Image (cartoon, rainbow, N blue to C red):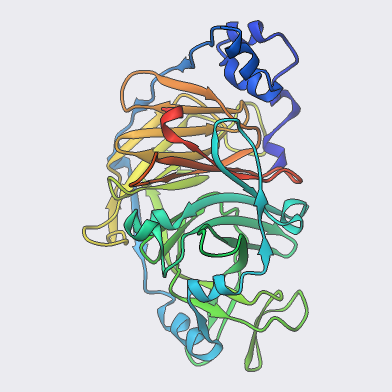
Length: 410
């Protein structure tokens, strides 16, 4: 959101040499100015990425999750029976918005923008990102239900709600996407209904059928991508839930009902975690989270930033009834809107200072120039090419989604 990016976070106008002395990689400055090729051709020397302090280790036993995957089951099944259901493939067959190519960084591999109705919407802001590669890995080129897709979460201010954009990322299909509203089941098994979920959706992770969504003050909410409900696109924009025997969702054709809740608790004397963003680590079969904390601000929490890893139960995409963290860090940076981890390594996106930090698991972090207004991160495994890091920007009018080679930032 825009309040996280005061004007002071923008790099002031100064010489490239001055930026280099301050530890800022000249590559990014020259790329932005379109001068990288000229300097390289002239034989100029490029500065190495800057170094940052190493994270400190915390006691992971201080952080615990409690999982409930059953509270909504009866109502979700009733919604599917009474309202109707759709698969991911069926949703994408009915995708009704187009994406277009976008260039964000000179070294990016992919990039696209949403339709103007999303790119310029003053009431909706993109936050989290995950992909079908998270869900199923590299098998069948990362296709879930036959489709290779990217999911981006948005929070909406009018009406107060949240959604995902499900984007087709498969050469066999059009460059299109569909919006799906996230809802919480209400009512009874006999007469089920649903209501909006007005949370920040700062991070999302798709594993197997399950979509985990960060809930800032509580932990995570869980959704099932095989349990998409169809709704009536008529009615008025403010209608939500059951009306007689029909179901409405602000004119959306599809809703994704919550199926579970993951509650976060901490040991006595430990400050409650702020679930600002999350990401999936397929290698260790875990979800990692971190906190957006700032310095000298009134709107967001201050204090030390933490990053914590929570493992899934053996053999599936669910957490055990009670899960204790296996890794906890105090990260020596603030303003983190994105986190990723893979094979013992970590990445942290500092949106205020436009910096992507990489930590190998030991020693100092390496800091790379990054985009302004950057949000969540997602690691993309590729069996036939370089692994990627996906990211996005949230600024109204400038909301590209893009991918870089992770090896260029590690």
